[in-house]
Length: 138
Image 1 (cartoon, rainbow, N blue to C red):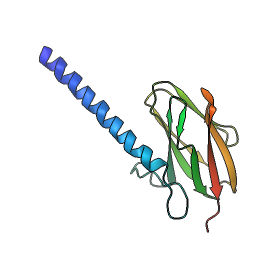
Image 2: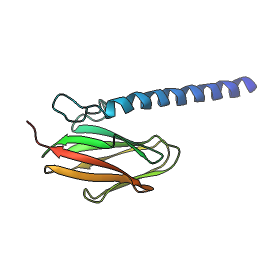
Image 3: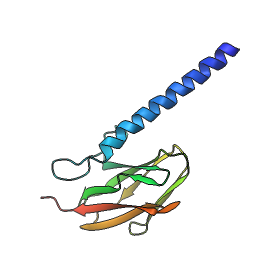
Image 4: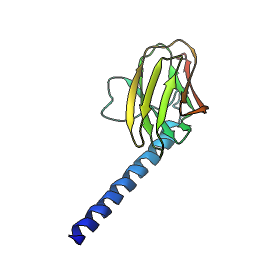
């Protein structure tokens, strides 16, 4: 019985470590820009029909704090809470609001936007602001 308990706990720790590594690798991708100056899209086979971008929330931090997307393009934002506290993705301008518990993931679809800047924030840490910059294709 002790053997199975130890095996279970060691497997559990290995899964958590793998998830942490995967999240760490996504963080570096989420803040990069492509050749046109737009944010790099999330490469995930679950999200193929729309341009998809990743926003991670970690205990009051938003990663990336700036998301650059093309104008007049419908897109999806995958939101992950990688922190140890609940978080709430909110944007009054986009009329979007999602509460995420620890280690949760959700997505929102954003309608085509005009050129401009749109704010988003963690409602549980309202001093932390992010922005979506919508710019024209050159």
